[in-house]
Length: 102
Length: 170
Image (cartoon, rainbow over all chains, first blue to last red; front, side, top):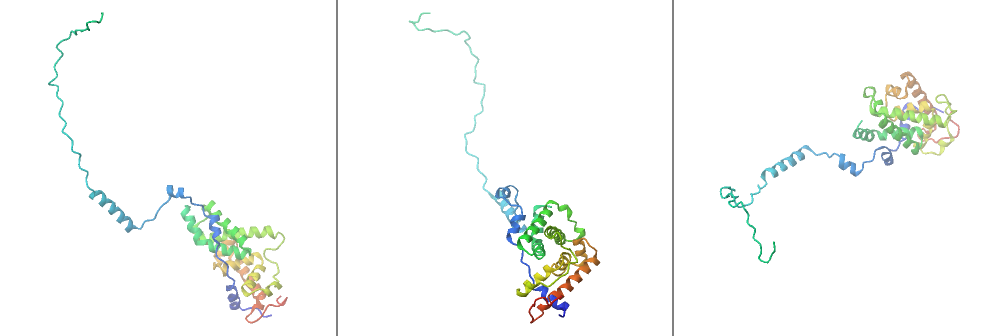
């Protein structure tokens, strides 16, 4: 029988198609990502314009927020020791009730 | 290699590695095993990949090739790797064209089959195949020539408008 030409062989070879990798392969090969791990070590990609807008918004919030007014309090009167007088009577006198013996 | 780099290498090359393994092993189960082991080898020993020696795809195909060869040797201890005669199979008669081509490629000696698949389906150059199969370029060229000659003979009954017949191709 006459052999196939190179072109005929190429045409035939092209008709043998192989399937793509099944999804189960990824499950077997790729390390699993737990949600806790993502929370602790995950990253989020933020586009630069979005990031700049967020930063600008945060800065504006910090700068424009209303400053809290100090609460109205009574002025504190300074304490002076001028009114204190030394004790004049240093000998205490003991007063007893009449019906108390000794 | 970071996890992100590994994921990227997997996503970019999983289909090529699986396709090659599927064509070499002839079954989805074996192909998945080979592809899985190839990627796990990269994960365990990333330093084996040298970008100066070729692409990540070619590196992974070379690993898959070694795994397929090891598996083939375990299953065909007494078969020749290269010089066995290729006889048309009567089984080709009842297959559709794509299946018949796959069956004909499976009839090729292992070393001819791997260079044919790497050249025709994965479109590697002779130099890239030589690196992947650890052989001289001249050897690869010779294996590819013999593989194509065998297929031209075995698949001749599939010529347009004709059906396979028993034992007519030798």
